Amino acid sequence: MGMSVTISAAVAEDTEQILKLQYLAFQREAELYGNYRIEPLTQTLDSLRAELDSDTVLVARLGEEVVGTVRGRIDEEGVGSIAKLCVHPRLQGHGLGARLLSAAEQALKGHGEPTRFRLHTGHRSESNLRLYRKAGYVQVGGRTADDGVKLVILEKEAGAADFAVSA
Image 1: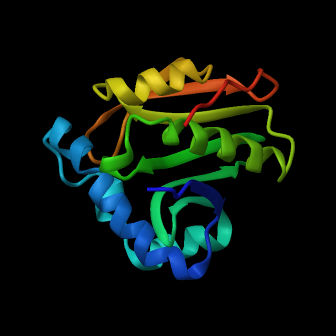
Image 2 (image 1 turned 30 degrees about the vertical axis):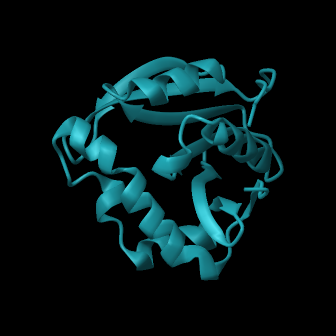
């Protein structure tokens, strides 16, 4: 194919592509939990636009197509919260999720000095849990989301060595 995937900050013109990708990529999660009310599937365009204004939003592009995305912000406790990491289904399993995760951590370090990074995923989401554990995240708790899905909360010290990414 000859094209490589690049990761950069999202711009306002990416909003619709991000929302469509998010909807497509989170279908597997919705099916896994038998719950199509999960927040990534019910998020509105206006809500996403607000996140673009307030949070760090990165996209992975293959040419002009947005094929991956992740969001992050540093909360009031100084924790870098990472959310809604997703990769187009046709590109999953090639290291793009790991690249996006690492890019989100680096971007958040550039916006402050987070003490640690925190993220969550559903308790049945084995591929997500594998990715996060490989990146150095450890389970620190759990909770039930408003949509009823049981979540695993994972953290990593911000000073922890970055993990190697491939692809």
